[in-house]
Length: 512
Image 1 (cartoon, rainbow, N blue to C red):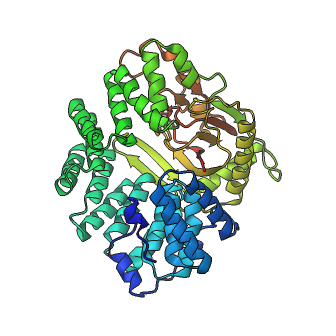
Image 2: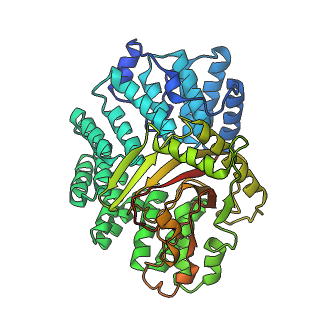
Image 3: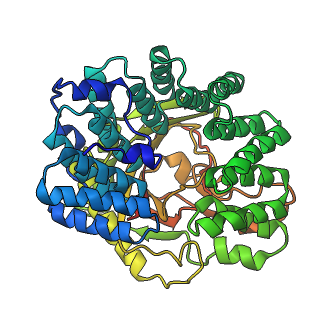
């Protein structure tokens, strides 16, 4: 059975020359240890299939359901049929269930190790799960066999960009384009990374190149719109996004970007109008929730703002207990901070655009140290206690969507003197949080300056928001403190001075 589901349902995968070489029986040694443990542990494949069948049954796409049914029927007669396992993995990814997609794709690779397209698509699944180390291992495995794989270089660049390794991401995209100059997705990704580096003019040129190759390409238009906004060309930016929505009226990313531009312009009723359409399609969209709150506040509806953004008990603050074998919390935090600072994946990033120096450690759960493993256990226990204390509220973007099952993405950040995080939120998740393992003395002694504090704002800089500073929430970092908040809460950190480093662990909780 030939796998066509990726093409039929618009799933982007590893589809360039690497697939053809894989089918030519050029064997690839697939090192599963590079990817860490299966996300579902030791669950049998039959259980994974049963859960996927239940997920597919809930969707209204008859073609998707029919394709899944054919793959399952094939597996009943040939339990290790690689194309069927891979096809079901793609379906799981299409349904937003990467934790089901990963074990299915790994089973496909075990059945046919020569299939480089399987390896590349497994990398895409890991990327979507926030497991960047295993994703990179997959893409590099493809590149070992096919050194000029434009798709693998492009996908590798995407992970490097998400990790904040912008220079290496640019290099990866340029290698993709050297192998395939007519690759509009790589031109778009290159432009997006250049924009993050502060090279806006070069980014605009890259987006125009993508549009020359693929007229009306939505991703290029959306990123071009964002860049034009930063260059002060708001009306041109709006025109780009409206062009996308004219062709794809249900494009939530384009609508979200349009909301942000309207916010910055103070066009709050238009923010609400666009947000209404977004929430109709996706009640859990984080950007729409934040924009809804800010627009109502600007228009004088403080009651709506308090309902969405000013909940009395959020952000929640919890002091963790030390693990059982730690003499005290201070000793545990010292060990945890040391593990972060010595982690092999620690990368320091100088953000030209944000003028901020930050260190990142991704994939903490892929390369766990004893301290990280202990913290992960403490974190899960704290989350369960937090969830148990919540009361559901249908229609609310947070209390109305309390998940039963979830996956945790855990990473660490290291801030030196002057380092900070600009205002941002965490799209695609339900709950986010930060734990402070090391807090510099300059932060502890900041007092009214609040240097190094986490600030839940994102709205006081907007037009017409003067006088609303009393709605801002501020939390002082304290070693051992866990801060939990809805993922749509815009938050940032205040820069601090000094030579010491602030070490924190951050997480996102994504519903399964």
